[in-house]
Length: 562
Image (cartoon, rainbow, N blue to C red):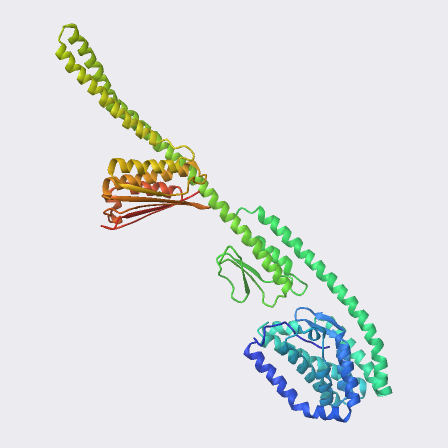
């Protein structure tokens, strides 16, 4: 049995421990190389035949341990047979140069791994030859000892390779490099049996007998290889179908989850089902939403929900890790969905509360306007009515001068009443915002500021603005009007700029003036109406910030979700 690990890396990017380990293997091989080359010079035909047999038999490889890409082939029996019938240096050099595989021929095997595979198999064959030569009892006993030594050295070499390349811890590397019982006994028994046939054929008929024996074995082994590959592909397909069924079931379950703490539970159940095996019925699996957890497990981030992560055992193969990553992705999407649903729910509640607050404030404002009409406007018209009666009385007695004076007073009362009524109507009109009225309302507010207070205004906003919820338009318009009222009353500014930008999730507003500014820490004590504006914006789950300083002007920034 020949074991080889060929997980490609770029260039020579290997851990220092593996580089040292590989250098030791090369050095030990180089020490026996002169003796082996001497045997080749003395027996060139035998060296050529055995090297060809090793090379041909190794090309018919059956995948035995996919986790570490270890192959079983007829090369193992031929290598063991060479170790029994040839001297140790000769057996080593035959296997060193004869070892090959399809990945190496296609240029898919990195140079470092090709060197490792050849040296460790060559040394395994040399060690087996030394052991066989030291055992009395004939070819069969020598073959059994050579099989054990060859495979023990081979497994040890592969285990150290996995460990020094940081692919697995030492216990896991050992487990991955060995086949489980009873397959271990079956595989080794087959190797010993076929190797014994080759040795006996060589002892009886020489190289011709070995060639005649090996050719039909190669054909039979090729058929066995095809059957085993087909069986393994069927098993892999069945495993992939089972994984897809697990992922499909998990996806359906996560669609109905309403509590984020149920997501890890569902994920753990799916992973344990997918990763379980006869050797590991309850694999260690952990899902940590906070990112904290066991450090002895391999961490796979849950994208979109960082620092949440899935933690599983080290050493899982690529297909198992693909399932782990798929489960992590499904959990990430579920957690993002729950977070978006929570945010949408909070936004909707905030909008309902904001609408209620706006309606409440509108009701209070209308009540105030009605009271203003009663207290401020009606008295003027009532006075005008009284003066009209007095005018009639003066005319009836012929006092025309008195009638003219009373008529002027009546006219003045009516004029003042009309003026007060216009102010009340203007205030009432400002309370009415229709859909799409945000931008026109801002233009009107800036124009009013210019006409009444001489402050130049500029508006930077798209024309027209994208459609916005009416509650948001009302909130933004009232907030900007409040800021402009502060500019008129307190800022002593010459100009003010209103900038408005509508994004996918937020509308951003900035009101900047070049006035005298103030200390924002005195907002509550100093008034300015900013506290009420901030409360309104926060009620809508927005952000309200004030940047100002004495003599530095004032900038108010508002962000409201849309």
